[in-house]
Amino acid sequence: MTENDGSGRRWSIGELAKATGVTIRTLYHYEEIGLVPASERTASGHRRYTEADLRRLYRVRALRGLGLSLDEIARVLDRPGDDLTALRALLGAQLAELDLRAARIVQLKEQISGLLWLLDKTIMPDAEKFMATLELHSVYESYFSQELRDHLARRRAELGEERMEGFRAQWLDLLRQVHRHMLDGTPVEDPRVQHLTTQWEAMAAGLQTGDQQVDDRLTEAGMALWRDSGPELSAELSRQIDWLDAGDLPAIMHYFERVRKVRDTPGTQGDEETPGAL
Image (cartoon, rainbow, N blue to C red):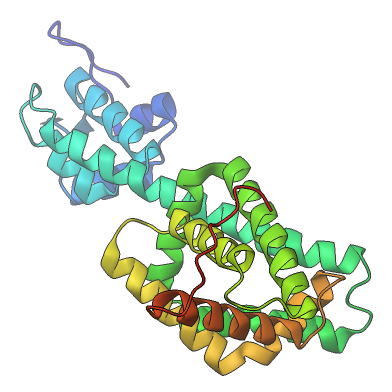
């Protein structure tokens, strides 16, 4: 039975549970940890919740809905009502965590979409090749820690899907042009090849996080992955790119190395100017 002594309404624990949709078990737990204790007790020891208790419970539910833990909520509610510093810090951290989760979801969606694309295009004619592709995903994760993958996910989210698609298209275009020059036997000193290499490096720089330490670690991880699993990666890409043979990618990477060596060695390049258009 609800009591009213003239100083405001009171709720029993059952009435409070029914009015707010919070279970009695949860209310017991909230009282046990000091989050929402009943302000009053009857002579027989029954809990009675005041309007202030009800408001506190609604605040707990609202903050819980934002993803804050009970400990975090307690710290917020224990501060003065006009002090929002702690709440702002917690919400900022929560937003950053949600951004990271969203970036991870986008990354996972792209991986799954890529696998479905391979199946739909019948590029994977048998289960063995498809399982080999899945193994490569596992190999990738063994070289790029969760922390590094999170940095990549955040960077992809910052760039946005449209710019990422632009990078993919540019990468394929540059790869095709370099591949053609390599097959044609174009000398690595040729200004056209030098220009393509510069474009390739500029594109790679545009994908970096901006944190030199993180970018160095990403580069090291990528180099280690290529060193240890280059043939498998090449075979995977050749299945996705119809004009690329399995052995072409290592040859292209070697071609790039020769181009850079010529560029970075004084006196080895000609005097021709880099053309403005290819």
